Length: 287
Image (cartoon, rainbow, N blue to C red; front, side, top):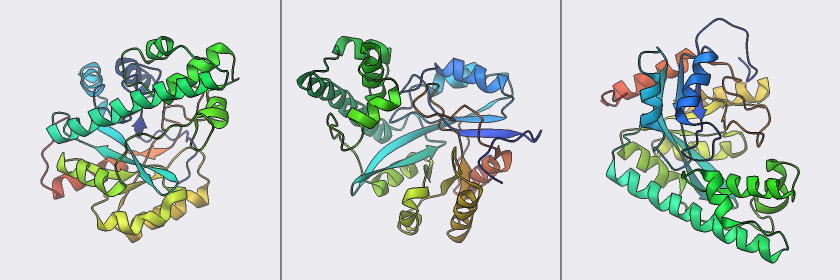
């Protein structure tokens, strides 16, 4: 199976979806409505460093037949690159998880403000109040700075803002608080969740170590992955006893072209494998 969307009538899922609780453009309710319109069987709400959109999504999906998997995406750091850990079926009420997520969100806020200060010194002033307005009360992040830059005409696209100014190692980039991948895995496990390595193709060398530390799966189905790349990741998952998951990384904007919800053909059996891992771990369903 490739990462291309399929016309198959088999039930499909999308296990990597963002909302306005982090840097997505659609509210959790609107995300549910779009998933229903697309005929998806299940979605996972995986906002960056936030579980705040999950209750609204669960409420919106009641009585519809759509399964909403409570999730999160944790940003972690290794040498000169970011590693993202997805957590599925996390407990949204877990105190340790929420404490760490709050630290991460506060760090995003400080980082975004410092970026606007850097941009101003570069002759590209961006109004901080406008950045916060664009976040609509959710976690402020780089995409909101990028959107403010786009409004000002400094860049021609949100992606351009990242590529030219606020992406890693670019002139206005600012570091923020992060945990290590192993710490993120432990955090997800402690909240009774299942940790999965997001978009792992360029960091597949990390899989052996992370698998030994409790990693449950890796994202084999992802937009832009060629058939041979998906097959490589499927083999890698099999070699280390991991669940091969997948999703669109949907944000609802033009920052990542080709990331429409449901654009990756992720079969329902992927979710069934995750459920089986929960049962084997003795975790009761909370959804």
